[in-house]
Image 1: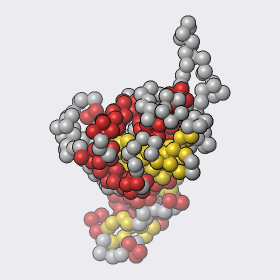
Image 2: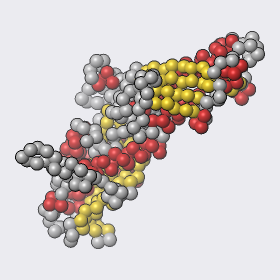
Image 3: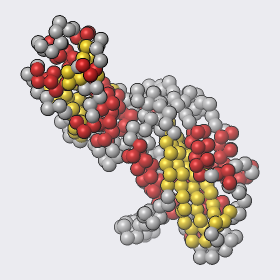
Image 4: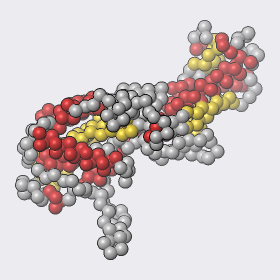
Length: 402
C-alpha cells in the first residue's frame, strides 16, 4: 500500500526489463548499463544528480553477480537451486514549503521547533543533527519539539520529502538566530569593547571577533546572560519544489533518488519450498544525514516489498465485495523469519538541488523495484515467470524442475 502507483508500475517495468534481457541473451545488469540515459527524456531535462550506474556496479560487486550462470536452474548450493535477480528503480525527489524556529537559551541549550510530525523515521534526530551542524552546538544540548499546531508550519511527513524540506528551513533559522545573537553581543556592554556587528561572528556555539579564533569567544549562554534576557530566537522559511510536480512552475532539472536491488532465492523442488536467502541494496539518495535511521528505512521498505512479492493478498467475497481476510491472522505479512540477511549500501554523492547539505528523500525508494528483483530471481531458479503478485506455490509447481 506504500508508494502507490510507482511501486506496482515498477514491478511491471522491471519485470519486462528482465524478460527482455533474457530474450536478447544479455546480462540484465549489462543491459541496464548499456541503456543508461544522459538526460530525462520524458521532460528533456538534465538530471540534478544521477548515480544509478554506480548503484548497479557497486551492488553487483558486493553481491558477486559476476559468478551468475544465466541458465535457468543451473546454480546450486547445498542441494538447493539458486536464483539471482536484479532490479533498479528511481523515485522523484521533491521538497515542500517549511518553516522552523531556533532558540538559543540562557541555560546553554538550543531549542529547535517545527509543526511537522515524527512518524518513526528519525525526524527528531535528523533535526538535531542539522541544527548541530549549522551552529556547532553539541547534540546533547539540543532539544527538538515537533508535532504541534502552535509551532512553525511544517510539511506533511510523506512522499519521501521530509528531510529535504526541513534542512533549508532549519539552516535558515540557525543563521537568523546567530545573526540576532551577534547583534545582542555587540550591543551588550562589557562583552566586546567597541565592537561593531560586522566585527563579530558566531562559530561553534560562541560569539567571537572575526580576527580571533572561535575558542577566544564567549559562549552563547553567557552572551544571553550578560544581556539580561532568557533567550535569542530566529526564524527560518524555505520554499519547496513541490509546485514543479503539479505543474505550477517548470523545473530546470530532473531530480530523483535511485536504487538497485540484488536478490538470491533458494528453490527446493522436492517439496516446492522457496526461500529468500540474501539481498543487497545500493541507494543513491544524495548525502545521507543519518545512516542508522536511513538504513532502517531501506530495510523496512524492502520487508514491505517482500510481503508484496510473496505474501500479501487481500481476498474479497465475490458476493458482497467485503474483504475476507481483514485481520492479522489471515492477512500474511513478512516476519523476521521471512526476511533474509540484507546489506544496504549508500552511494553518497551530494545533490545540491534541494538543499545545501545535498540530501534527498529515501522513505519509499527501498520498496520500489524489490518485487521485480524477487520474481526475476524466481525465474532464474525455476523457469517460471510470475506476472501477478503474490507469488503462489501453484505458480511454482509449473516449474519443469518438479
